[in-house]
Amino acid sequence: MKIIKTLALAAGIGALLSSASYAEGLSGKTIGFSQIGSESGWRAAETSVTKAEAERLGIDLKFADAQQKQENQIKAIRGFIAQGVDAILVAPVVATGWEEVLTEAKEANIPVVLLDRGIDAPEDLYLTSVASDQVKEGRVAGEWLVAEVGDRQCNVVELQGTVGSSPAINRKQGFEEGIAGAANLAIIRSQTGDFTRSKGKEVMEGFLKAEGGGANICAVYAHNDDMAVGAIQAIKDAGLKPGSDILVVSIDAVPDIFAAMVAGEANATVELTPNMAGPAFAALDAYLNAGTVPEKFIITESKLYTPADDPQGEYDRRKGLGY
Ligand code: AHR
Image 1 (cartoon, rainbow, N blue to C red):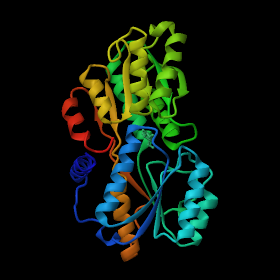
Image 2: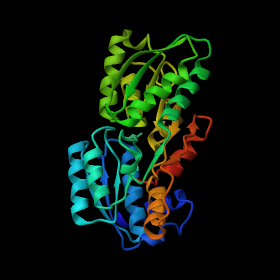
Image 3: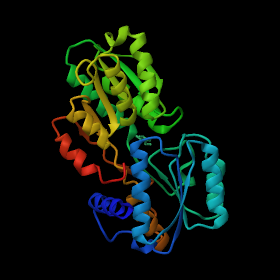
Image 4: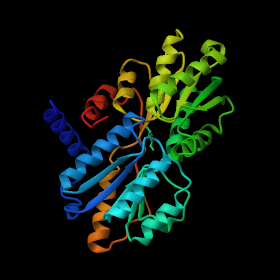
């Protein structure tokens, strides 16, 4: 069973990565990876893709799950430095508080690559950052909603990601920019759901209760699909139809949101690829083996998907990717 799952994952990831021969120069290198945890389906896929790619490329990947705690990440990074790894990957849980440990990595001549989230620190403390344009993701979601509702008055409730994380800050800003020109749209409630399904459901239940059982809510904007899936459940439990009584727009493009679209319960998502490791390994290969310094920011695509984009096909295409 495990072998079949691993083969399916490898096949799915093979389809995700454009070149089979990239980063082969990393074979035999040791790379530490400080991962945030497993709060969402997207996060699980990023971990699976990174591990599978490392294995395929012959990298000795030292994986550390921080269980959502920055202090665990700092500890893991210090451990990687002490082991003398060749490079470090970090998905930083929050944006602040990294200067000291990244200075230690720099002094040890260990290049650090940020994955999927940004930090507030001098740019010379990391080699490159592989992430999406998170402000754009929020803007794309907001602009979609503006077009979808037309002239209709629309009260929006917002489920924010982890407090202090770059996607929560930037996706909020982007969405506000996206709806700024539409006087008929307003965010009436906004609270963190910590990027998890259970918290998304719990917070949405509170929103529904506070807003006339949902009668006063036109749309929910969730900073990730997992919170949207939780919100969909809360809307159904309240006796309303997600996708029509309350529109649902979110970010990530995980298989479960496409399943919800097939069921008519979700309306739009903005894709975040779980393949952050591909560009990161390519950049590290070029840097460690040829001294080539990569661009400081490697930006992944942010594509909008709606029920018009073959959600069943998108579900099928993604389900083998470790979500
Ligand atoms: O940093 C990326 C975000 O973190 C994803 O959108 C979310 O699902 C994850 O937890």
